[in-house]
Length: 185
Image (cartoon, rainbow, N blue to C red):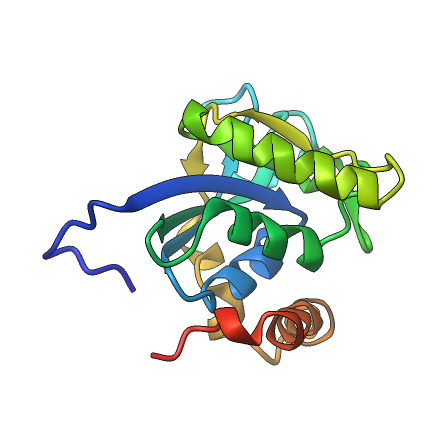
């Protein structure tokens, strides 16, 4: 998806945790202006954890997607608006039937200059949801990519049970809510 021959001077990075990274990745690969999406783990205390370690709940890591996006095509605000529609930011350490600290809602900053916009959007969503938002806003720490088999999981396994019944409805919600933000390539 990423064109490595010509560097994009407007490329920025944001990392988001919105439950299972298969769900979040499946949505953001469809967003116009998103150059790359990588599933991974962040903000835990174990270096380069495995999926099994993260699932045990002892590493402190969150399942996340690291988005590289063209800030001339889509803004951080727009990405965060999509993020808050496709997951429930009011449930602590849970999205649907997925429970544990690795499924917490979080915005992880690679660039502290993004904190003001992220905090503003977070405050707006929190107000709209009567102060129930549990999304954490932190600097990105201890990031590592997830194993290869997690990358592009929904694209490769659309008929797998979890993908068909959990991921696909989130993708459909994005398509219905943000048709103007869809990729057309």
